[in-house]
Length: 109
Length: 113
Image 1 (cartoon, rainbow over the protein chains, first blue to last red):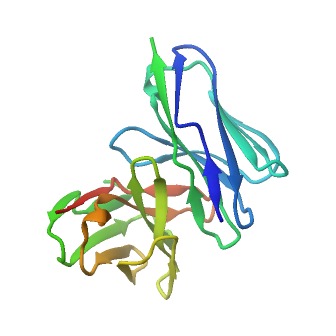
Image 2 (cartoon, each protein chain N blue to C red):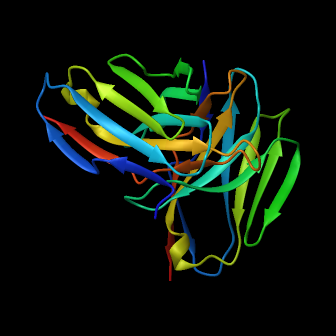
């Protein structure tokens, strides 16, 4: 079966760095995505990894290891507005998107 | 104007009723998706369409049907709504020419009583 695991909740302090982990077991692999979703709003795209390694985009970075079925999203210089849910998603062999349950991040002052 | 729109934004309906959720996009993307989101379960794929003549079932298609009326329009129907279809429904399009990211509509909150 298809399975994506993420921690349910995380808490961090404003200005700090936080790493959100994602592990996956899917039918094939055609890319891993991270989305941000504020409460009551639509998800918005953060990053896309298809090859192993680190992709950096401003304060956000995403890492992928295909052999380990593992990814993480790194958020630096946390701001209050970063309080949101972070969704890990994998595109499988059939071009379907499989989403994890999401990690709710709370940033405290 | 928003690139991906959904109507209605909120709907309360009774068990057994037929209901249609509509999605329109101005992004010019061929691929469109319907998801439902439930607390603790994340987004689950209901149906997807790679072009007007191509419709595919997702993970949880039972109880739902779709229609791709044009490149810009993709509708989701619940033929006979049941309470466990109460959820937040999102439509999305996919950018195949760039980052492969999905663009989500604002969502429709559906309550079946």
